[in-house]
Length: 389
Length: 242
Image (cartoon, each protein chain N blue to C red):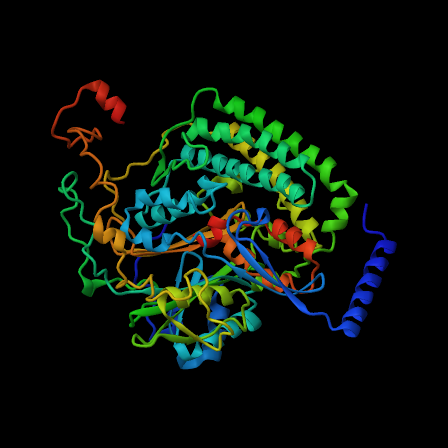
């Protein structure tokens, strides 16, 4: 199971030998360019690493290949049009991006969606979390050379995506959340099918636990690799599973008041004390299980009633400021919205999770070996659209 | 849901009034006041967050106090706001359909609402930190010099501020004094101008003023099914529209 002392000793011995060789031979530094098209970068992230032999001396992240300027574009769009934009920030869990923005607009307008809408919102939010993290759970394997998990991931994620499509009309970009409620009610038969899909996802989690977490190669390649101490992680602004894997017991779903119904559900926040790549994987796997339970509880306790509160046909938001953040699959996602009373916002600051999560890489990659770069990038789990906005 | 008024209950002249019976921020505010003195310009509380405005010379000292003394361990974000009104033709007025509802003009430039903890300058830097143990957040903002916006760097106190300051630098032209490397993060190296400033034109909107309406056919009469709609529509169409 765990890394044996023998392995650890041989690792240290190898490092010491490397160091001795470096002193004796004065090896020349080499620049290694990763990306912008590397599969480990989930898009177009470029990494320029200076290597001394197999060890990283310094690493620079080059982003911006996908910068779309959403903060500028929001200033020339109306509030209902902006959900289309924010859908595309973290494209694997689009519905979860819409929610904090809509909540911020609702806060400024002082409207609140009816209980049924809040409950469906929570269910769809957690389903987009499942759609997002199931992919990570499989993909982490493929980054380390195990090809099977990613096929499992794409197979079982499809059930969730089909259900999101059935309810919202969009597999990836639902654009379903509205100020004051939701676009539509759930289709007939959806609840029963969703419960079946949740059971499938749980069995997928069990399979992956057997396949990967019990695998010796996976363990040796992730245990002790990319350790983030809690204090440094928080200082970099890491959030979500990345910081919970460093032992910080903090989840915005539990720790702040929200109109969504997380507080009424029975679930658990998982943390792991190690802070390494394995811990980040483990925490995400547990979170997927919790999310399936939360979806089921939402659907069991779904209140009757309308799904849309009364709002004007042309939405005008009174002047003011609002900050709303939620616990998205990748971490804390927040919108700081300034309104001057028009049809569109005056300024929107999008605080996306991956931007902070990836800003730690120059610090984290210092001194690691080249194959571990991919492990660390994969375990931090970022979406390019969430970095570049 | 309390109301979102730009005016916070307390005035900066009367520091005693700010604390309601149970204010989780009372001691933090006291510590900030002791440490920063006159540099603490204005304070307010809104929706569970504390808002403070500090003088720009004390911008980095505020971060040190918040992190080391008051234990706000989590760095959320740092950015800036340009409070200049839009200069390009205001796209907020819909022409044609729906014009009768949009009869009120957008607020004139003189009445720009400055939000919590106020402000006097065109550029403001804004940052948020959070305590993961006490679950409290603090917004810090500071007025900048309009001609040459600059503030001391936070990157020595909060490591995550490094990238946020690079982004704010390229988007707003705010100089962060003491930052190790203010290179462009998103924009190409030779990019001219500061895109998120309000006087930076969005060229695609100059060419095509209103996204979504200019290139789309007008809605049929009676679309939307509102009570006020003049043209009576057939029931089937009503259902389809709703």
